[in-house]
Image (cartoon, rainbow, N blue to C red):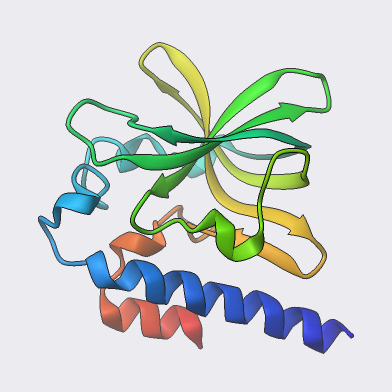
Length: 159
């Protein structure tokens, strides 16, 4: 059963990378502002890494900074009943439908806290829906977004 779970997670990762891999070229409008050297990505600090559990209240479109391409986020009510805005990544890359993420789902979110526009947000690296279903959008060790990796780096991550 554990092997099946790992295969499901791996399949989701490959699907997500495949979906986002089409827009990896620099200057692609659907990734504007989401680059690894961009202002937004520099806000992800591994020193602010944290995790929490909560319930998805809403899947939302976000534009973290002016001029950025639209992104996908979540409104998650945490265990303390606080509403947390979770940034997942660019809309062209993040496919929440691929794991059936919807309102009411119980999730565990890993990532880093950041201040954007005077508000505290959570920049996700991973959203885990169940033991066998998770959405990975950044490497946990350094926060590198999967949508910003080169094809060679993506191939290495798939190994």
